[in-house]
Length: 94
Image (cartoon, rainbow, N blue to C red; front, side):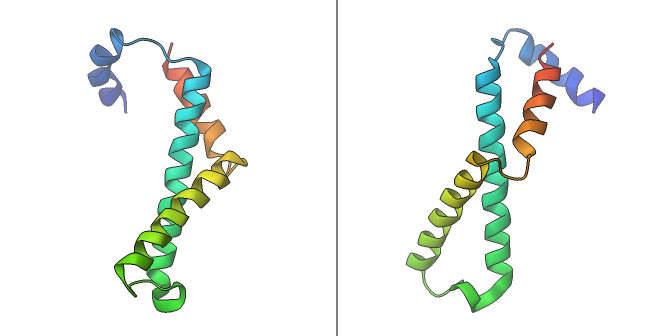
């Protein structure tokens, strides 16, 4: 972990510091993406129960639904990951 942070420090040295609002938005986007991917994995592992693999249109519609549902979950507090990620990111912005 320390090596990764040292390797990235020259990149972030000249970058503008993110505001707390930007940090929280990025953390919320990350949680929404994670939740969407979890739902996608659950749907794929469930087989034909949720229409997985029936046709491309169904897969596209389910993908959009998973993405939107993930965003809605994250906006409503999700699983608490947004706060943890935002807090962690704000500690590294020192």
